[in-house]
Image (cartoon, helix red, strand yellow):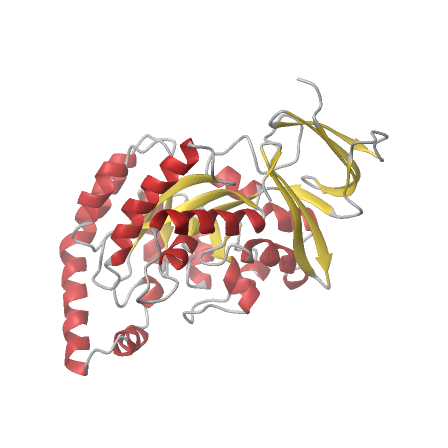
Amino acid sequence: MGVETVFTGGRIVLDDDVLNGSLAVAGTRIAAIDAGASALSAAIDLDGDLLIPGLIDLHTDNLERQVLPRATARWPSRSAMIAHDAQCAVAGVTTVFDSFCVGDLGFQEERTRTFVDGVADMDELSAAGLLKSEHLLHLRCELPAPDMEALFLPYADHARLALVSLMDHSPGVGQWGDVEKYRDLLRRDGLTEEEVETKLAQQRASRAQWRAHNRKVVLDKMQGRAIALASHDDRTLEDVAENVADGIRIAEFPVTMLAAQAAQSYGMTTIAGAPNVVRGGSHSGNVAAADLLRAGAVDAFASDYVPAAMLEAAIMATTVAGLSLPQAIALVTDHPARMANLADRGRIAPGLQADLVRVRLYDGVPIVRGVWRQGERVA
């Protein structure tokens, strides 16, 4: 197939260099990279902008924000998926792992509906070629939830399933290691002190009954498959050791420096929340991602709940932690690709998928000026 699109006049971010040059796309793939300007009159002049690989977001809850823009206003599911997709694309995210909560702990019953409807919309709109980004499935398995197994198994063999994470949002562990903060959450929901203590007892009882069983269900189903497995919100050395023993190789959003560094010492890779970097700290009072970054304990960023945070966090990493631009961009491109076993993307190199993002830095803030997925412009 002949060359179809040429980019010139830009700064191309490669694995370990930034090249002032040109890039050619043939079909869906990168065909060639050359130093210097292209003489082709039809070439796209990048006017000095950066050209980076398309971002890969391993964890985003952004669809939930579109489904429930207000606590009492549920948006039509398909319209929410279309809006979510558009927000990801304009943020430069060309591969989206839609992260659906599997299991209800009694806080957000609507999440199950979001999960079931969202997967159906993802399938239908993807098959119709109507989504700008490529959407893959990330199942977030809530281990203490009584309904987790029944919800998980029908989707465990889904064709788009690419990541499974094990999480536990019980009081006293993980993100909610500080039980008093958990109590405050329940109080903000309007519960009386007696109701708060009843809820805590119920959550602890559910964890005691279901966590071990549900963990075994997930691990048994995933054994021997080329689907990435992650733990979620690791807090202690014991958390990390259990995950390593069970063959889990990704620590997603470790909430303490101790857990993040322990995970890496075991050969696990770590994901930090990009909003944590952009905001300057954790929204739930846990370890600051910038501190993890400076300690060398971050392998990738995920958007969590703000797609645009990924690129901004990567650019901030050059000043916050002194990373080179290629090293920083790899946090949202190459490293997530490797973690999710996506060998065809995440870098700018001949033969790889032509997922590309044009970026201009304005006062240190990245502005996305163009997005191409598989060689086709989508934003």
